[in-house]
Image (spheres, rainbow, N blue to C red):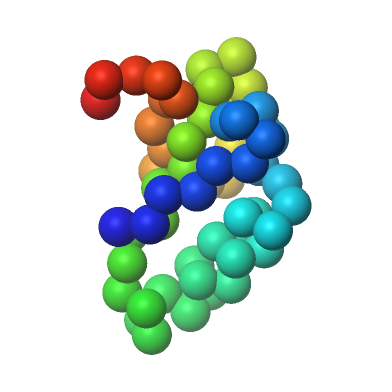
Length: 59
């Protein structure tokens, strides 16, 4: 499992986004589950992302 976060969970942006998009496109090669950490106030930033968790949550 690989966890990504950009700008304290406020954006789906920058280098973490580029890396996660590349790994998603090549997921057969990497075989990892890709998860994004997001502040619940910014959930709309992750439209199109398969899996996420809320920043600073126990889950």
